Amino acid sequence: MKFGFVGTGAITEAMVTGFLGSKLELSQVIVSPRSAETAARLAAHLSLVQIANDNQAVVDASDVLFLAVRPQVAEEVIKALRFRQGQAIVSVIAATDRSTIGSWIDQDVELTLAIPLPFVADGEVVTAIYPPSSRMAFIFSATGGTIQ
Ligand SMILES: NC(=O)c1ccc[n+]([C@@H]2O[C@H](COP(=O)([O-])OP(=O)(O)OC[C@H]3O[C@@H](n4cnc5c(N)ncnc54)[C@H](OP(=O)(O)O)[C@@H]3O)[C@@H](O)[C@H]2O)c1
Image (cartoon, rainbow, N blue to C red; front, side, top):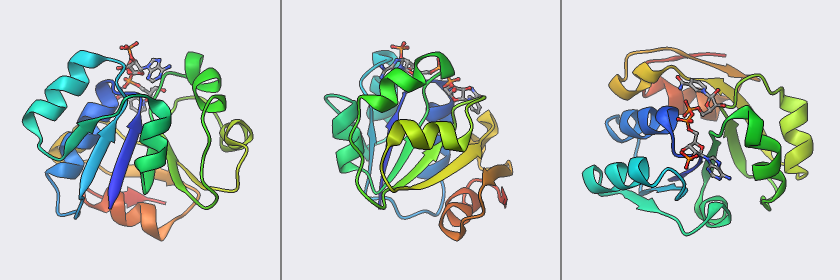
């Protein structure tokens, strides 16, 4: 399973650290190149992490795609991307509801909202997700648990 992250900031660093330290069987983690310092740190310490050339390359390579940019740039970032029908997408973007993200994605995808806390890095925190999803519940159960 390949995880991709558009937005390589604080919460992506925590999720990548937590997922790769968990029992999830990941073959690759692809991160977007912005915030080069964080991306390079992750790639240097975690051999499965690769830095993509651009955001679209992250989308194209991902089985599960995490959207983790700040709300202020989310519309511009998401509208510029092309998603696959049925693609599994997790938005951790604050204060932006599911229908709004869905309208920006403009494709029939499996969209889940999640609220991870930085402690996902240690695998010790429960993550809220919406709507209920057995696939996403399984993924976040690896970092401490899920409330659906
Ligand atoms: N931090 C938390 O505990 C937490 C928890 C749950 C949810 N969230 C949510 O998760 C999102 C990210 O939060 P964060 O704390 O990780 O913020 P952050 O540290 O500021 O990270 C945001 C990242 O997005 C990157 N970015 C900006 N424009 C981009 C673009 N056009 N394409 C790709 N990447 C771009 C930034 O790169 P540059 O540095 O180069 O600008 C930065 O690496 C927010 O919506 C936040 O509300 C955060």
